[in-house]
Image (cartoon, rainbow, N blue to C red; front, side, top):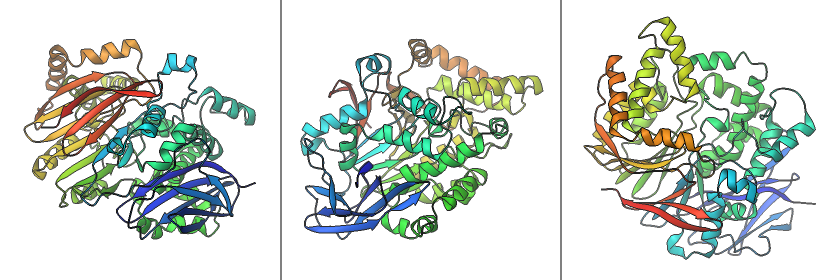
Amino acid sequence: MPALVVGPMLRYVDSVSASIWVETAEPGTVTIEADGRAYRSPTFTVHGHHYAIVDLVELSQDIASYSVRLDGEQVWPTAGRPPSRIRLLPADGARRLAFGSCRTSVPHDAAHVRTHGDDMLRSYGCHLARAGDAEWPDLLLLLGDQVYADNPSPELLAFIGARRSTPPQGEIADFEEYAELYRQAWTDPDIRWLLSTVPTAMIFDDHDLRDDWNTSQPWREEITRVPWWRRRVVAGLGAYWIYQHLGNLSPAERAADPLLRSLMDGDGGGALDAFAEKADAEPSSNRWSYTRDLGHARLIMVDTRCARQLTPGERRMLDPGEWAWLEEQVTGPAERLVIGSSIPFLLPEGVHGVQNWNEALSDGKWGEPVRRWSEKFRQAIDLEHWAAFRRSFDDLAGLLVRVGKPVLILSGDVHYSYLAKADPGPIFQIVCSPLRNPLSRLLRWANVFTQFRIATLVGSLLARLAGIPRPPFRWRVTKGPWFQNAVATLTFPDEVTWYESTGEAVKPIESARLR
């Protein structure tokens, strides 16, 4: 019997088109019916799973509701839910973006609410189902750790245990387990409805593959000696391409994609595996970063994980090819730039100094014994943000200053939310994290300490002792930190609001003007 496994998910939307992604239980033809028109696409099969992405083109107005048919049988919408609608990008540009990161897919029962808090993605979906049009975002940005491949839920562990007893114990091993991971993450009814009716753009962070992914060359050398890692990274990048990246692309970009053509021609997964293996071994062979023009703003989603250059002494957050691409993207005519970076660019200054210091020591500034200790310290407490790639930090700081227009950097990863402002220049760091994965009380206090003047002085002193020059400009945290699960909205031109929830209701934590 035809059935949806995951989706429908509304992905790329502009002023004249929309793309809807699905996973189906059987191969066949997927039909989207909207405003009296039918749009069709056959499925393609990868490792026994069936997918399609259907483009609705030549649209001239918003669509009040759409339905999904599989081989003629209607499978969406489901009873008791508001209609799934499509709002095109407004002629005068995006009005509001919603964003967040870091979401564990555990149940919503009382026990897991006590340990993990309310799921902000689910709460936000419940809120929008009742909200008026003025509160709806034009785009939802998911800024990393959409799934936790290295920390599966109890339900996923049961799934894994039923199929194997081989390493890696307690972690995802292959494409089949990734497919189940995504299914569990995105099929709660409230989340499923949200993703069916709000366009989404996504980028990975480390837990989509594994904690500390590409933190350093020693990390890569160590993990590649692990027997099961090759299968894991190939499955992880392949699944990311299917479940997240494919929908980031415009219809024209997908039409020109040779990998998608191979899969549509019936490759069955061999081409995807070869692509993923090469993307890991040779990052310059592929680009995960992408842009979306939002009218008055240009969204630039930056790959800060796979595109790293890890050579000791020449570490870069972005390799030369990726950096050249970013330089080109920031020169567009938009009034402002919105940069999606899964990891923050502007950390609290104390943490920034410590990461500068650790990078220098890990590169051998104080000798070999200290280098080895510093590398262990780096991996133990996740010293891997832009500050730990100081050459790239300085390059990006200079580039953003030269742009001469407002730059809003949206990030997650750190499991607390805050706003930082650069001085001088209209450069803002806006962090919203987590959607659902709160820090322990001890780590909360440790992060609060980094906001105070003494922590800034300590971090600066360590950086100076290692001979590291001062940053190109100063900045300060002006709002936060907040440690509860949260989702944020950016209302153009200059307002950001963070929200928390209790159950299905959301309420503001705080708002700020970006001035």
